[in-house]
Amino acid sequence: MRKFKLQVQTTVDGYMAGPNGEMDWMAFPWTADINNYIGALDEPVDCIMLGRKLAEGFIPAWAAGPPGEDQAAIDKMNKTYKVVISNSLTESPWDNAVVAGGDLTEIVNDLKAKPGGDIIAYGGGTLVRDLIAKELLDEIHLFVNPNAIGAGMPVFANVGAQQQLRLVNAQPFECGITALHYEPKRS
Image 1: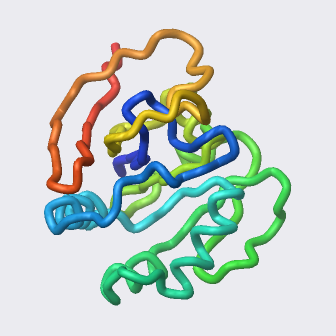
Image 2: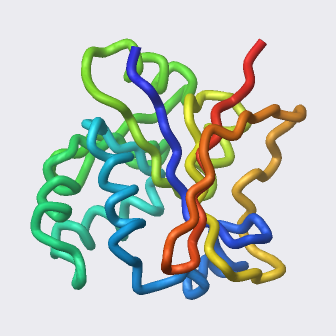
């Protein structure tokens, strides 16, 4: 069965965005060591899952070729199949992306049962919250930026019952970000 991973940028105090969706706290420029780490994390991925709000900015930004990204990364992002989770869209306005609505657990289980490489979710807030709360992830990769913002959109919002995680790896990078790789402890 395919692995389902979450990759999310976060502040040291656990927020993935500011109170109004701000991302100005992220540490840039990234250094070669973090780029290599993310490249290895993304290598086995052949499906990206996004929430609708994130998809509206993410997919067009990669289609336009974000400044500072090399062509290989741009090509990988644009060629990788995408599933956009939305109950308001009925069809995808983007190339190489489909819209899936309804029961999130069924959507994830159906994707994981299909042959292929790993699946990765990059967010949005509602999707991240629901994936964590429903315990649908096999791996959680937090990229902890060296900033605290005091308020905003928490990564672990409304998770319901306590969830036990096992630290697999902690990797600091020259740019100040530390990657924390966790796996859920399941009974």
